[in-house]
Image (cartoon, rainbow, N blue to C red; front, side, top):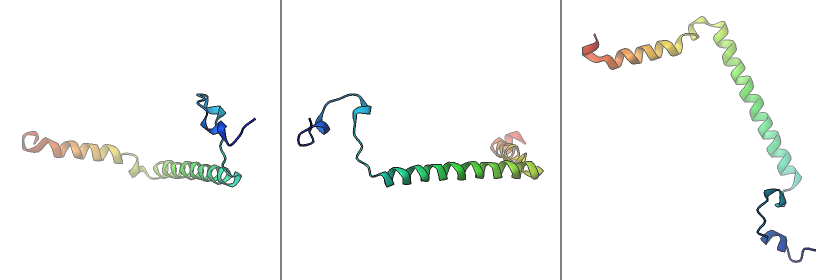
Length: 79
């Protein structure tokens, strides 16, 4: 029997014993938000993959930038 909410002050080390007093709408809202974020992230990544697949100029963009950065760091000695 719990009197005056004394179960909240227990020194239990098992986190599954903790009681969450959240309203159901908070859990539902957070769940929907997380699912929405995951779906948008996946769709965004698929758009990037599709764009790189369709446009050949995007396939070597990172290589060209790294190569250009390496040339800039050589300075007068490297040329």
